[in-house]
Length: 325
Image (cartoon, rainbow, N blue to C red):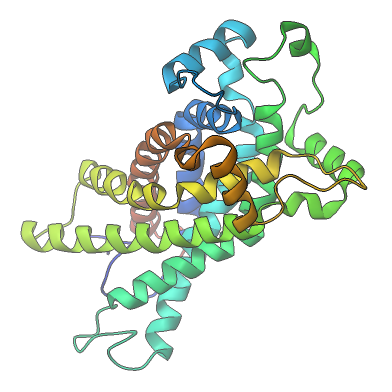
């Protein structure tokens, strides 16, 4: 018996939430293992301030400087923090998305949650994606990314070589402990507003685009899609949100990187103030720093994520590992 598709515009037989939780976590593990170096390059590019009249440094040059000065495995800095964050993030993302989608279908007025044929509407999917993005930002993403960015940014690839031997942050738990001890627990939630906006926007667009493209392709083909098709659709849908909301990601990175010193005014204090400061000091295009490596990171990452999620969820259903409810 063929497995119903996990992400669909039409309501299917209810599944146990743990199925989505486990499939999402597995997808996060596979995706981060493959794509983390691109995230390190993106972070270094965003943290580098553009010098007037200097030629911008691209992703490949940034990668080579990191490798030459700090070693190849420096591209994997912060991976423990990523594992700690992305596995629960993906678990929360897919499980909450499915639950929000079902809940909205049952509570929204006719034509909003479900259409006349009983299919999930585009409004439903968009809203469920938005809510899942906000949920993951609050529960997982913000504190995990604060730790990751501190670990990735502690050695700047342009820094004096003598400074490279200093290592303040060693792993995610130690990093979190140091941050809380020196700056208070609220420091783990630096940049939470732009993070929530970024994640909510990303997942609203991502899930909506994925669901619509998948539904159209499935209808045209007349059968379930193959893994390579999920891979392709995931990559296309994954690149849409980041192109629009890259300024939020730049602001988030700057806010999470800075260390707050008691008695001093932080340079980046709010979303609007940070955008204005960056644009004034470095130019408007600085708000799109790191977009190329971000797309290089996110598009294949989302492709791998959706392909893995679909495959794992299908197998969990086929082997009845977690019985449906």
